[in-house]
Length: 270
Ligand code: PEP
Ligand code: MN
Image (cartoon, rainbow, N blue to C red; front, side, top):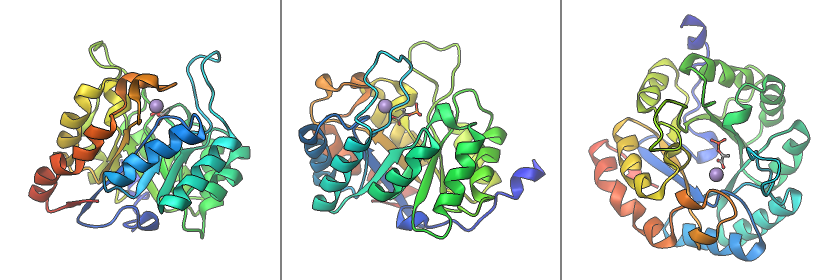
């Protein structure tokens, strides 16, 4: 794995998002559906005491017949609400043409599991964030090995974009009781092989909201640097990933639920 060693950087700060001795929670809806829905969901993130909010405008849906997101209109809604609430935004790019508008409206670019091996997209994102305050959250492909995931990160860092955070979001296994299987050993392995921060997305891994908080606690213990979690002000009404979204009340209790575990790891939940 020598080649992976070259991914070592000192990216301890990604735009202030990942900081030493802290555990960063990024929460928000799967998708920006409307101004009202995003504003209410983002307000719940703020009320829960978190500073970073997620929301997809360009959505990589498995079916072409599912809601594909609001595109640039979704980005505008996101930045308007985030600016008003003082939140920082994380949102996905699927195509090089989307990089510029995403960077205009959000602080952190997400590259989804389905695009982890889209090397031309990775290179373009790496070049685009070079010398800026923007960061990238790189999800692990659901059939990718840890080595492939770290090499994908190198496509970004080798273009000069060093603010990269890895995100474990579950892999495909034979298990059917969860949507994917959260691979916590990969979090620990990745942290041993690279200095890049590693966060966990328990929402897409489990696909069911009742497992999100227990898996979040386990992620803290597995040395993760943070969480990317889906929440919605009315989960049952969500247009995308309704079964896994945390309602506002659960989000409200998340910091308190995680802090004893984070404290034991010498971290503060932020
Ligand atoms: C998402 O974060 O909404 C998403 C589509 O995630 P993934 O790429 O991990 O499936
Ligand atoms: Mn989702």
